[in-house]
Length: 419
Image 1: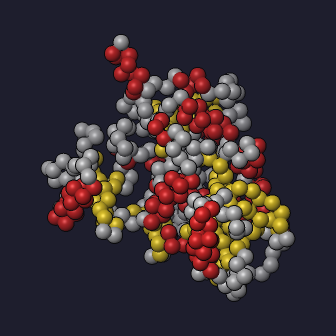
Image 2: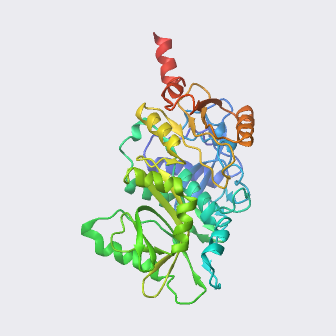
Image 3: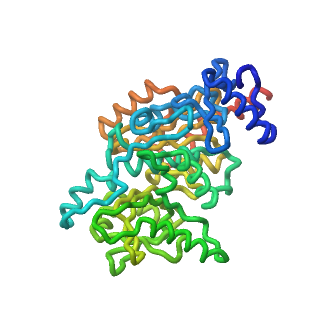
């Protein structure tokens, strides 16, 4: 609702833009309200170029009704809550989102290091969950998770089945990146996400890609870096150490040193094993930084990896993949929580179901080797949470079907009421 005028969200775009424009120009001190609940959750209007966008007020997504399109998981339900307002700041006038990066976008000269010292550095670098636990800066993994969240690729409704492909994923990620800045620079200007490959347009696509790469090409020890985000097709030995082949990029390779590859195998063993075991049915997504030589050789400087299901929903391990796949197959609606900067020992729900009556329901995976600290952290999170919770004990039941089936849905409740 805009100042006593109901927003015509279902009419054509011109009328919607006119309504948003009138409110933006005349009522900046009075926020628009979403009427999905009795408390009327405030929102805000941002002007992006020549268009007006109606957006959630920062940190208020969980105040919307669970069946509202603007509902978001509460801050404690993912690693995002700890970063908002510090490492991630949203401007409610412009809609811009400022990111404080925990990794450089400029390569500095440095002396050669041994494999052992690279590995020692890697334990605290972005390769290995950089800035883990930090709330002042975002790691590579946190940037990847935030892009996925902002693109709403962590959200799932039954009608989305078989409708997500790389064209959809790339388009949503670019839209999300367009609203983000770092040190006054548009993230989209420094982020390469491959276009969907089209054989009939391969020459034009190659020219655009190499033009972007050459914009930062340099032989100097200190040089600008680009960020990249793409799906991994394969990693194999090369004369330069190893090469990473990205899907939708058949005519360029991304090179990494043997030391960096060694770190990848160690830190992302689970993600790589899932990718290799399923023969590519599990998507393997990489985000990192690259440097480019004048010759055109592209070197990966730092990277993080993320596994995702066939529907592009991120998963941390095989148990989460089972939960996601079964939830999709049974027509559930949910949000997939992500860790961001959270360390391995922090508790987090594997799933947040949003098709439940009144309140969302969080599903936690309980494993036999969970530490006492993790068990206690999970208990505290469940006690303080703003959602119902259930647990899947892997040792007692290797398949979570009975646990998920027991979680009620609003649709099922309505059907029972009619019976």
